[in-house]
Amino acid sequence: TMTKSMARNLGPIRVNAVCPGFIQGDWLKKGLGDDLYNAALKNTEDNTPLSLAVTPEQVADVIYNFIEVSTVTGETFLVDGGFHLTI
Image (tube, rainbow, N blue to C red; front, side, top):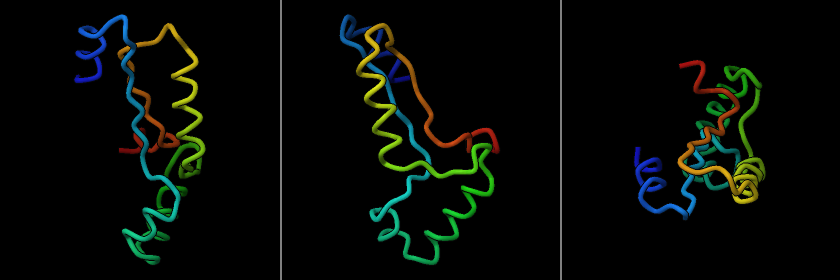
């Protein structure tokens, strides 16, 4: 809702949101610990339609594409390999 509201009120400035799910990487691994991180990673890979957990590089690609496309505003892009479809 905030993304849409800001896009309406700040135009012509574009406002979009990127919402990643589980992201592979050291930051989350340090926060969760090895065992919990590995279990969460396996669960994510086993239960997403694309059978993957996103990487920081994949999230960066989505952000870059939002920057490149000058005709999009007020959008929310879920980057979770389809995990949101399983809930």
